[in-house]
Amino acid sequence: MSSAEMHRPMGADLRRSVRPYGFRALLLQIPAILRGLMISLGQFLRPPVTAQYPEAPPPVSPRFRGEHRLTRDDQGHMKCVACFMCATACPAECIHIEAQQAPEAWEGRDKIPAVFEIDMLRCIYCGFCVEACPKAAIEMTNRTPIVHDNRKDFIYDMQKLLNN
Image 1: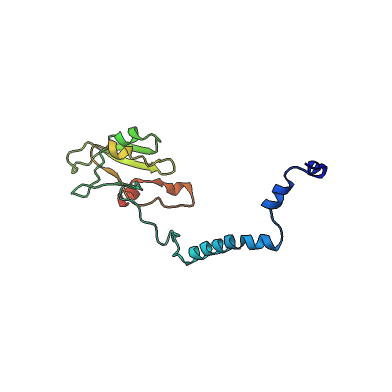
Image 2 (image 1 turned 90 degrees about the horizontal axis):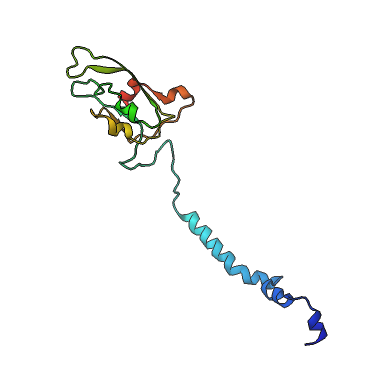
């Protein structure tokens, strides 16, 4: 080995072979540039996959747990008997119930709720309230939660839950 080769920095030949400069470098990268343009063109010609929410909400699974609903019996009375099972089973403690005596015409129940509210900001949509209800008075719909601009609108009262 000559003395000039011994004083040359290590890797100088390696750098020259890995990183070519100039026109030769451009020629070597043209296939990669063309491949990238073909991928971009392929993506451009595909139909869009964006959702147009809220004008066209995306389809949800039938098992989706959406907003709550209070159900009615055959006579049109609400099925809830104010047993507090749903409020007891709720881990987020978002259900507030106040009971009152049932009207005489409503046979088979002692109490009905005077106040039934669900704070949807605290609800975690676990479905424990639905599982705990012995009368199937509460169920979850497929409706996605609606966006409101103030906190009061997220407290669903009894009338809103019956109309859901």
